[in-house]
Structure formats: C-alpha cells, structure tokens
Length: 342
Image 1: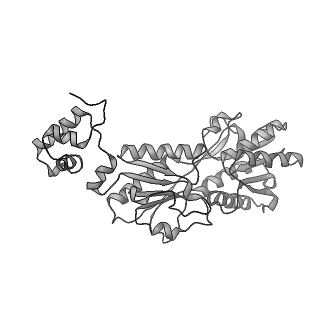
Image 2: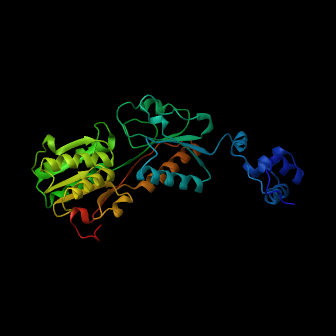
Image 3: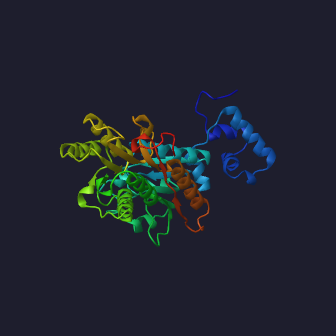
C-alpha cells in the first residue's frame, strides 16, 4: 500500500525492502556500492512509498548539502528577479537548491553574513560597490566561491563580469550620430558603483573620440531608481536644457523616470529628447515609445555562475576561470531609429 499522503521516513523504506537504513542511504548516494538486486528492491520500495530523501540527511553521507548560497546586493527589481530565476533554473537542472540573502550587502556587514556556511556547498556573491568590499575575505572562505560583478588581478576565485564598456560606448556613439556631443548627458548611480562607473568611463571616451571634452554638468550621479531619473529630468526641464538633448541612463529604471517626466513636461520622445537605458529589462517594451537599451545577458550570468560554482564544488582542484560576457545594444523608438532594428 502506498503512503504518499503521509510522511515517509528512510526507516520505512528500509523496513519495506528488508535492508538497513545505511543500505538505503547507499542506494540513494552511492549506488555502485550496492548489489543490483538489492538496489532494485530499495528503489521499488521508494517508488511504492513515495519517499522523498531529506536533503540534509543525504549530506551526512556525501558531505554535501547540494545547497548553493547566493548573496545579492538586492532582491527587488527586474534585474534581480530575472537573475534569481536564472540561478534557480540552472541549480534545479543540476540537482541543487538555493539559499538567497541580501543581508550580506548591508553597509555594516561582511560578504558572508546572513548565511550558515556549514549548510551550503559553496557561494555565489554578487558585488556592485568598490568601497567596503573585502575581496580577500571572500577569497579566504572555506567554501568554493563565484564572484559576479568584479574581477581583480590575482583574485583566486571564479569571476563573472559583463562588458559594460562596449555596450555603453556603442550607446553613446549612437546618440552622437544625431545629437551634438555637448547636448549628450549621462545619468547614473553614485560614485563607486562598479557598473555605473564603467558605463560613465565609456561615455566619456566616446565623447572624446568625437572631439568633445565632456563638462561636469553633463554627468549626474544619484541612484538606480525611477525617482532619481524623474528628479533629474524635472530639474533639466526647469532649466530649459532637456529639450533637444540626448540621455544615456545607467539603467532602465532611471531612463523610464526621465521619459515619464519628459512626457509630462511636454517634451516629445524621440523628436525632442532621445534616451537609451541599460539592462534591456522587460520594462523597455512596456514604455511608449519603446526604450532603447543595452542588453545585459542576465540569464547567461545566472547559468554561468551556477555552472562555475558546481564545477568548483565537484572539482576543487580545477583552476578558477574568469568569464567576461558580452553586452548588446538594442535599438528601439526612444533613440529615433527603425523600430524593428536590433
């Protein structure tokens, strides 16, 4: 008789198949140590009873929990939602589970806080700030680690970064195609944010490549938020400088805040204001006109991070790899191009 409606223990499986609890554990975790007829009998009992192995009980034999710790700067917004979906998707495919926290990125915490490290086989840590980050401490963890977002010379852990520079350079050059360099603006996050700083550096280089030395008032720093984009655009409207300009925003939320403030202020996009964001989140296609943006390979980041960590868990002696993923400029109506162009 099946026991699917109640809790089934490993002891129940052992009794049904006439073997010890240790033998059931071996069938689950090291089947090559059990004779085929015995293993077959145990598997039949598992199927009949509907037994689901306890994750941590399995770890007593294998010395692995099959749990991956994930430390993110935030868990809200389109970018992090898509990233967590990609991480979870790949982990499930490979038989692992996730333990996710954002507490590790509070200003008064270390990169490992919020985790009981003895519960995880390894950690994926996403870093977005240059200050307050102890990379040496991350590298000294007694678990395999993959770092997303930063790569420093000599860092002895797996790293995954994206080519912020190339995507930002292409976005700026696109805006320069029809807008004078001194009317192009960069609206980004605070100084010290890795992504924003790299995108700003590319913006500067593109302007200088066009023979324009950027002035301080062409750069505005705030936060990766709709409200910051709105506030910046309102101040530009009040000073009469928004109409006839082009804006490269360091992420899509900033860009959408700017676009909404411009629309409410009677500035037409793209005829009187051209805008490009960064990330190419789902929000880009919801805005009207649709938002041009630099696509971050978010799903690929998640899959690569899980693959890299499991490789380090299962092959601890393998050399750490340093992966850099490409970004892609996706052009839509907000920057005055062919709406079907990519």
